[in-house]
Length: 175
Image (cartoon, rainbow, N blue to C red):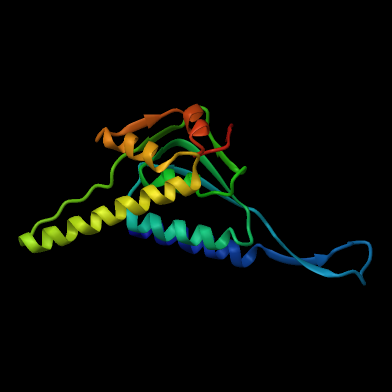
């Protein structure tokens, strides 16, 4: 939901703001260079999914925060729909998934009413969102655009196991 997304965004901003520290390069030598360090951020994901627009807000903030921080993503229970990209968007090598976690991908969903022109306009927006989702998944996994399109082309919910999530590059390690 939008309110949950706002909570996640606020928490991620807070962790990024509070996770930066300074220390001496050599702790035993107070005259050594002062360096900045960044505490890793753990992001636990268990979701049925939700708004793709809110997912993109979290995704974009994660990309920004990863410029300095390691984001450990941990998928537990269920990682579905919008949650799949968020799991995959963690720092590569630091994306974990529970052995019994179920991952589900599907096409972007929408429903509209109104004039024919309004509906046509909304269809174009949904197509753009779908393409953007596919491109982001491709960039964060081992899957090609064609592989993702083939999976989604089945036009049903596509369930994959934790092992398959590793194989596809959505996660790196089973816990």
